[in-house]
Length: 78
Image (cartoon, rainbow, N blue to C red; front, side, top):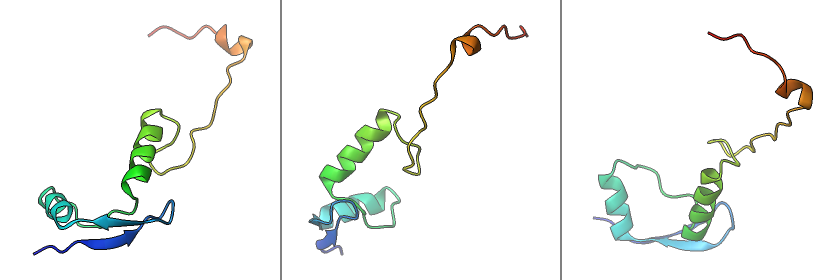
């Protein structure tokens, strides 16, 4: 039996409700941990990942600049 509980978002610090229905649904999908982020922070995080701005561990992907010399390098053909 699941009971709704109040959790604190690790990103924004706001309280959010982890409903009994959501707990049951996630348990059926195999998730064992409570969520760490509220819904709005979860959505923002997914959007950032989809834009490929961050690695899976949350660290930014470095911006790489290619010089004109590097563009003109002939690579051996396989």
